[in-house]
Image (cartoon, rainbow, N blue to C red; front, side, top):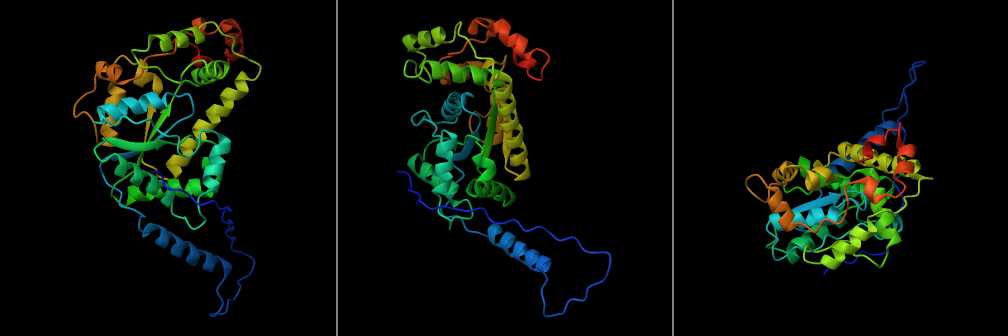
Length: 330
């Protein structure tokens, strides 16, 4: 069902530095000679004009509402998509969200390298959304997960995809909106270690009626040792990635809503969900209740207390106390 992307290597376009004018002496330029800076301005204008008026490779529909979930791994995106999907009307089509741009740095690099060099307008992104709209025409939402690895900053095809999202917003037509979800970074690290240490023994998520699965998660989430030797550096790296991603989305004028995993799944009310559905323009017309969320979501499989989850809790406290990350402890 998915369109294949040809295998082709791409190189970033060279960046030309704008020369500063000299104040020492006026230079006469013949009328028939175009300066480098003048040529660059002309080329930039033509390039911008071409990008702005580029026709999409397929018809992007308003419904099902196209979205992209952007978050780090182990940040609850799958559970979030299930709730969004069901409450938006995907009762019969609550399909799993696909990590389309790659589930690891290596696979993400491979994905963007396979995009044809001729695709300079982010067509790869629109084609996938169109294919999902065609597969699930009666769904409330369709989309994919985009994990922000280094590729989002370095790969030309990734930047062209983000540029497309910004252009769609400017053109006032159908937008592909980004839900930027964040989770407590210490919990992200803990979840990674938990699943890495129990690989093959526990599922990523549990249905509410699967008591065995839930018990396996509870057991895996209780009293394990979190390595602390590189804990601070891991948290700094993840935090840096989060901030850089936010700055990039803002710079590219991507239509984005920022939400919190804790407010979505551990809040006292469902206002974060109500805000999200309002941003998307789909789903429940009024306020969402936590009962609605709980009915639509996976079973809870994490313990909210670090002193229960970690047998070396005191050691973790010593490492984080007095740092920018001590507020992550709970």
